[in-house]
Image (cartoon, rainbow, N blue to C red; front, side):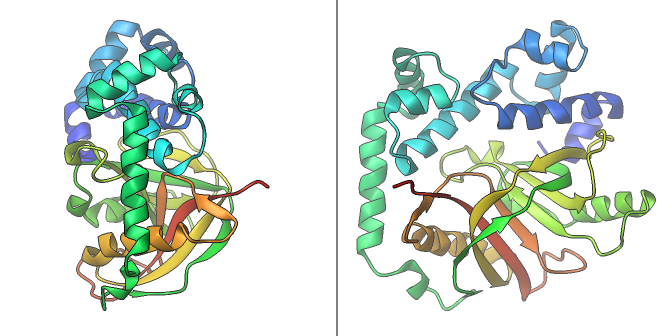
Length: 297
């Protein structure tokens, strides 16, 4: 469900209460995210919070948090060397048995089999020709590791296939920034919270955002989140947005070969070097930030 659709189904005041909770959930999947705890956080009754959440998100709180935890675990099983128990605990499960049961119910394989399958697929990709040699389009810069400073972000969430994200979301953010008399030289960005192929297309979350100077209270469909300082594999993409999936495949391949680093998971960040996001432009300049973590010796 898109942010605008959410706004149509709930009042601005209710969305203002819900957006910070969604940000809190994605940043604290290993913590207590029970209905009672989160309802108290936004000063609503559990009954009212349950109805609001299901109406706006399309899933119950339990379904939503369970799905995000399992998708996070699936991602980390492949890219992290932690034990299966550690992955389970880091993703908010209390035991190996509970995690294994729920994981198999969702993905039809055990966590161990999924890890072996995923890493086998990854090895077969890396043993073949470099993915960036298979495409003449788009143009990509060299991939380098860079440290991104902490950023405060005003965002509108899109839920659904990434290719259906429209530049109208950034126009709404621009209008909001003008009304707030923020500096005119806005930094436009996108935050891909989920991995296509792992998360169902209709559940993919993409946050259209702009950098803001400080924290603020959510206003209607416009929420606030913090991107913590971290290291990323950074590549500049020049071309139409339709070529971004190709770019991500290439960058993931490159990032997996960076000496002293490993791919760190999600979210991936796109920073648009433009004064206005235009989905029809054939020569968009997009900096793609893929999280990496330094390998400890």
